[in-house]
Length: 66
Length: 148
Image (cartoon, rainbow over all chains, first blue to last red; front, side, top):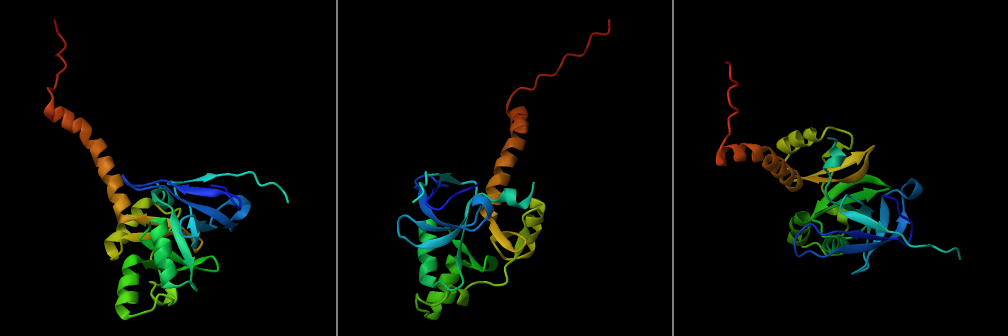
């Protein structure tokens, strides 16, 4: 997986009735967008270090230069 | 199959200076029961929801106590490129349900006993299908070739 700051990572549910979880990439620690990532969970704003598995996918956003 | 191919779900970690309250909220939000504890990029410990209860709440620790006070360290690990079957023997000889997968001391994910069991059950199901078919349904023998 490759991600950039500002991308959204979606973690797909493992059980019936479970909902998708998502977080925003705040920092990329790997080389060339590779994990791990510091992320902020959308729901409660808490930060964690994320190591994506096969249950996760990234939604890229266009990052326009400032 | 290599160990890292046995990882079925994303891993989540927190730094050593975070609190047990932070850890509980991250577990809840991420939907995981264990977190890797990371210091300067390296895996230094593991904390489970059970650790938060037994070593935190039950010991009257405040929610702002540091997570490294309740974590398990050192952590039992398996190298990412090791054979996945090595994980079976590690689970057999250690009282753990989750095994940290590392590459050069850097955490990459976790293998759980539950996930391995689910995979094994699926594989057993696949293997038993032809046997079940043979037991339940008529077995048609090929006719003996005519000799004359």
